[in-house]
Length: 495
Image: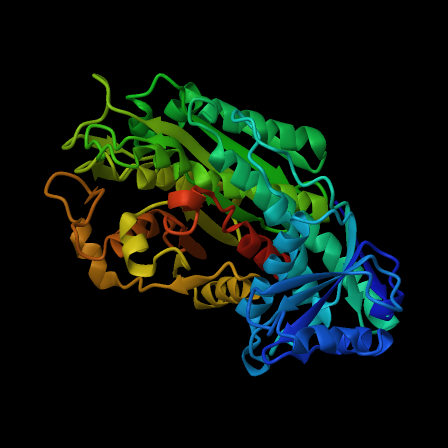
């Protein structure tokens, strides 16, 4: 797919289709008004006959509009003008691109980018346009045979009002393409079946990223390496699986950027049966998505390297399966983490925090400026926030604020949850330094409190993406979140 920015009047665009907006009660946008005048009022006449009112997601494809150079004009309903906000803009963009998939258009120019969205600039609108296009083009290829990406639409040009805006729009197009490339990588990895996407497969994907970009280096720690480091918590999760666990460590920009790194830690449980504390059978297939935190780290590295961001970035992915077996961990077992802290495993289905706690301890050897972990950690977070926002926990107000702001810009939103010392008591154990669960109350909070014990005084944030990493039902599949949030946060750190 090719993207470009262009200034110029819509009636002079020699393309297969021009996209313009129409607000409710047939109120033409500025670009639509220009086309109407050029055609001698034909556009307005069609609308007055009742073919379209401008309600959200309505579309009307017109051919051979008089006195225009384009083959088609696509009218897109935008709803009430005073209510046209972020959500309405995304809705209009997706409706337009879905309609184009049913047409024969190969190249299009959109003027939706000229619509005023309160509090949003041109860069935001350009980015959202690319995101919408790439999301709708995505197909999961293997192993199910499906149609590939829509090959008819080859290029999309965003219209800008002034030539002065071209440089900014073109720079934004590059950023948006890199971010969506990372998002779609995370999405694809999440969608792979668990007999394909094993810990070894994730390690191979990290090595492939490094092979494509010399700024990335990769180290794969095997079972013996983790045993030597004393990672008893992480290794306890893998005991029931025949797939060997991996600790995947990526580093970007270490040679050119000597500053302390930002460390991303992604949970990589490639299938989670719950172990001996076996999950119910219904929807257990969706536990292949339990590695979406790991996928988001790989996706973020792909985007950052494509953007060539001037930053020192480390990614740590503890990866394992969690399966029942004669050698699997049992409720009541006590393990010793890399930190030396002992953990009583009361529930083997609370395994993600066992992987993460050793990875977080390992992360401290890099003397990071920030640690951010990303994990499909708790069903409790899904109950609290649903599928719209990731749960954000942090011991640093400035870091939390920056991550929340990045989520607002990208639409990949998070919501800050409490992280108060009072919750820590729920993790008390009679037999070890702590238990791995804190009871039914505030399950997402006590999980974060558990992780906090291992980062100690480091600047740290935890993103619980259990509700946002994938969709269920007829649209079942990984979303690629929170790659957009993470990339925007990193961009802002070097801006």
